[in-house]
Amino acid sequence: MIYLENYNVLITINSTSNNNSFKTTLTHLKEKKQLYYVDKDKEKTVNLFDYDNNILTRDNENIYLELKFKKNKITQNKLLIKEMNSTTYISIKTNDIIVSENLILLDYNIDNEHYIYKIEKIGDINEHN
Image (cartoon, rainbow, N blue to C red; front, side, top):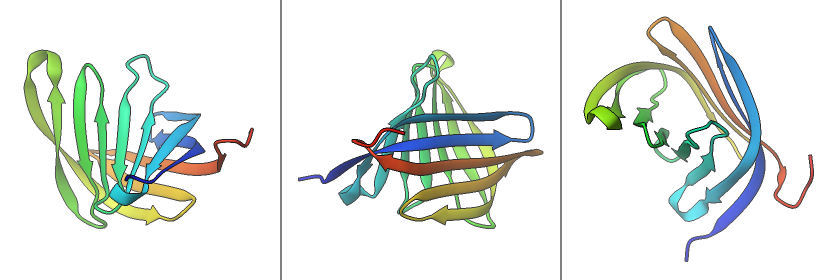
């Protein structure tokens, strides 16, 4: 049996050129050590963060993106553009990773763009914020 917990969270993605945040419901798949949520974008992007391996997967009708984070390392990451059936790779330099019970923080660079991605627990699913 897979043990699930649901939380209200604040998702924040800040970059050098753009800032975005929204509240949503996150499902914690404890046995798999994964966090799952759906973006509020028009594509309804599905996000899965494997906090045991620090891998963020983003998937929608247009793209499949797998980002691997290793502190102070550069990783090559797969981007599939579905319509074109074309795969390319993106280099990411991870500056910092914080994984705790109430916060996931990924600080990284893609080319000259700096990003900070956060998942912040703001309450249990039955709480209203």
